[in-house]
Length: 83
Image (cartoon, rainbow, N blue to C red; front, side, top):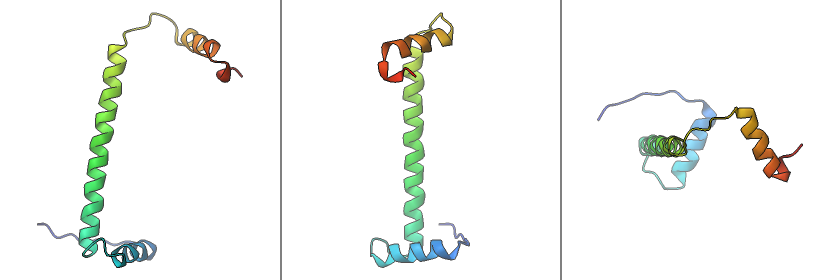
């Protein structure tokens, strides 16, 4: 394992101490490792979502119309979007 030294504002230290007092983490290192793991998992989930949206867009085909015309049609179909 690699050792890391960080500096944080006192407000964040107080928050961390509160979380540690709740008993969910053994110590500050355990808490920070969990935060980094969750951030890593969230980034992976974001990438999966983005890839799915790109795939959906590519699968939907190409519209051979001006973007403004497409937007106008969408607005015309939904009364809640009319200004």
